[in-house]
Length: 247
Image (cartoon, rainbow, N blue to C red; front, side):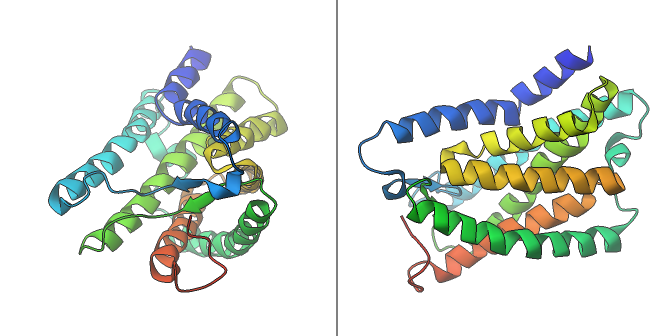
């Protein structure tokens, strides 16, 4: 039952994203020209020239992406584990979560940027375009909401839920950490080899932090901060600084 449950949850969320990313990566590899001459856009317009319709699509995408998190909360409640509180996604320790999360974000964010720039220069990565939204009033709030959605979805499912379930199935801690980190890297394959390796390393670090404190709260905070800086930083700096690739 637990094995089937894991497969269903992943098939409805990041497992499907991993398959999609693999297909996308194969397509990029077989396309004429190097990877660095291709672009992967993360937050794109869904209705160019129609800002209100575009906003509706953006909010719809963010909301529906969080449905698997609601499913995980329901499944954890059914085993009387207290829902998401069982994996440390609650408001019991906000100061701790934000403090540890900020430290993680500072340590991983800078090194991640250097890895991306190096991998792209070596031809192992596509040019990542964090946002390509129109310059309208809702652009910044939507980018922040998108960053938070990414953080909640990934950390709750790939770390908290998956490590808990694999532990219940009798997996060793290191085997569970390996599966979690490889899964995280795999659904970033659409960015190229650099995206895969960088996120896999991040996955190991995050999984070990979770095993240390049993909370995904700090991981959600760290991931959200990393993505917010990436999205807003690109929006402010793209085309204004020479070292930032723009696709």
